[in-house]
Length: 222
Image (cartoon, rainbow, N blue to C red; front, top):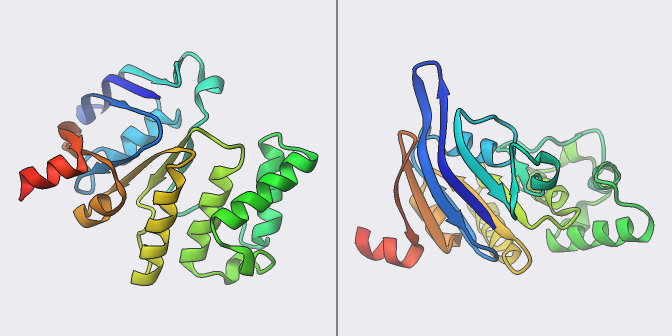
């Protein structure tokens, strides 16, 4: 699904991403684990085409992100703070996003109802986003990412700032997404990654220092 080969990103003399190479297969949840400043977000931004790379190659579903950006940008990047229009309701916002993604008519209505149900925001669909808790705002952000049925969903620190109950709910939502999508998420917290991911990539100072199934890595670390 995603192939990253010798990816490097430099800012002057500082190397944020240093010769990363890895493969991501369809239908799993992958986690980027590492301390703040390790290069996780930079890597995710490059994969989604939000940043250029100094060197290296990224292909998504067979399309080069730099040479075929329109075809490759089927992945959706959800930053730590979702870009929501807080003066709208979730229903209004999702309709706006759906139209921006080219959805129309019955297909648009069907997809909106589907993502509202999938993210369990039915009871707040007509409430202003400005009045929602951060947990519900994250759900609305994930709902808009799901519109258009992308093959890959990318989430950067999806549970930051949530209370324990909201964290459990978002974890369950993320695990349910792999039935139809490949999911990539980042965190600096091991328990967060191990709770939801099938495979973990550990990044430190821009380098990939380990990559294996969650089960194998947990055995090695114990």
